Image (cartoon, rainbow, N blue to C red; front, side, top):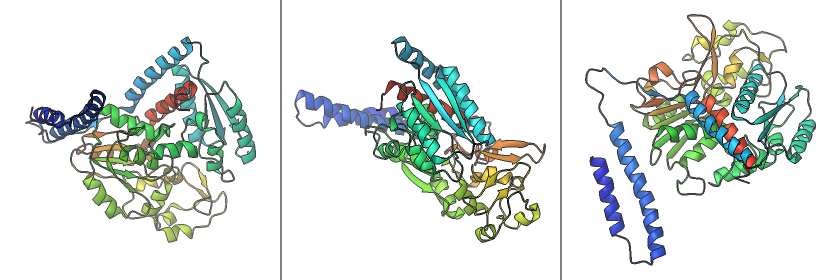
Length: 429
């Protein structure tokens, strides 16, 4: 009641202080002030909720687990209704073209999920499969053809691409109005200028989770762990920008951590954060996990295997042994300057298991985990999927937390489909 009374008091005071204006000017001024006072009221209510004591008889609390799976189902229903409505007006059914290069198992799995989800909401899809030897010129020719094809609403190039192909060039080869991944330089530029654009799907997923869950961002401290141009950077842009601009932002104070942020400094920042978004990438992984001089000295011939004991000497003491499982092969050359064949590298391109631990999180913070890591379960010996957050420990302190799997992943696919419908309806361009 105190928060509500305060909000009503501010409303009365704000309206009473309006200068003598004409009817139109007064109406606009009232509207702007009411928007501001609405934010103040929301913040006061949120702060009261966050300060609510734990019920008697309990020794603590656990975070609300945000089900990205259920939220994605709801969004897909909304998209399906949008598709049906669009077609009922005599328009062509939205069509998504996906270009997949090579035989990366993870990429094939992601594409299967996208095609299955597109079918569920009534969006047509096609898969253009190319060998990893495909030239950059051929890929650009394909995107040019799809750009000119009137039946194609959206185009997606599944990343990563082989080393001899420049990802940025290929992404920029897709016309901005069909760039449903949101990676084109024009879409990224418009995002940074607070203008409407096709937003990268993972960043859009995080933003949608925050809004639909009711997590307050106005005036809050946010840490984004990871600065990749496809995930970390657009998430930070969405959260820190002005809520009254063309493309409303979160009005938060955002700190971006990256590969050169020392672990002790990261901990200082996260302990002050109301919201922690963990989207660590390979470069962050390399900085935290390895003694880089020892890593750079490794030169292996293609097809060779490195003994587990030798690699163990290159890892930081705090890294869980579960990371060092080499049962699956993954080849990497561009970043390491050599050919490494370990399951460890699946983690290297995704995130860092238990990068964020409970001692790094303040009470009642909201934690969103974007990480994807395959680790060996020490009990069963089977490979399982985890995020970048120590989920079981952090959930005992946080107010909200996303699981892995079942959190940001399903939402990313849903937001990709939403971009496809937006592209088909030409709402942005």
